[in-house]
Length: 259
Image 1: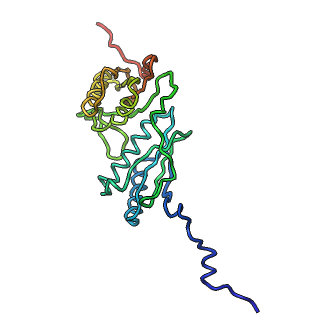
Image 2: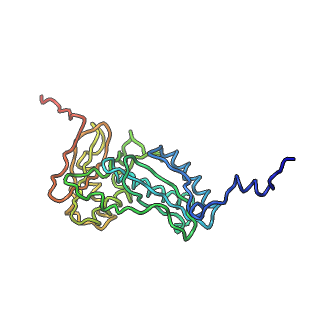
Image 3: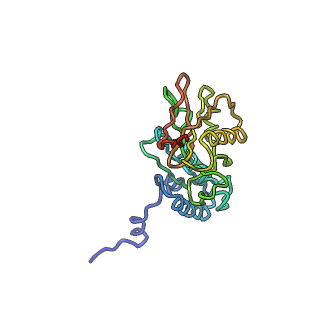
């Protein structure tokens, strides 16, 4: 005669209770550089998880790469946090973002952590990003457009910005405040026969940095980088004793012939 295990015992074999650590922290999603529209969909799902778990907090953990615009990774993580608060209506006390340290490839993680429990990721001191650096580091780079240019338009689901957009330079300014020995360099590029020159764009970016951040602007240099196929702004961190970075235009200026 066959012996059968009680149904409760059978269920316990297949549904073992989660460990305290598993209950305390749960990885909801992990991804690299993705389209902005895809990111918003992922954040929407993350917001639902938070709403369904009122005893938990959400953490956006980001892992930048030293030589691949670390500031851009930080900027997107911060924008994700703002999206969760302003668009999804999450309480600011229930969601935050954190630097998880440098990796070989850009990575983001979304964690759901029971209130009072520890996040299984140790915070990384971003000031160490420039430790031992002897040459300028390209901290951030992004395409820009000009106000009033009829041939250009800022789309909601794009990574384009106005050069004087509010908050655009906050993370860059924070890096300069953390290490007073660093200098900042803003290099702007213009498009051929388009509104706004490279020097004008660079000056507007520096002015925006000054308006929203308490940074000694004598430590920041704004340069016109010449022409590129797309307008862009680069933000450089320059260690003590290093020369300023050289602009890298990729379009030659056309000079009119004299008659």
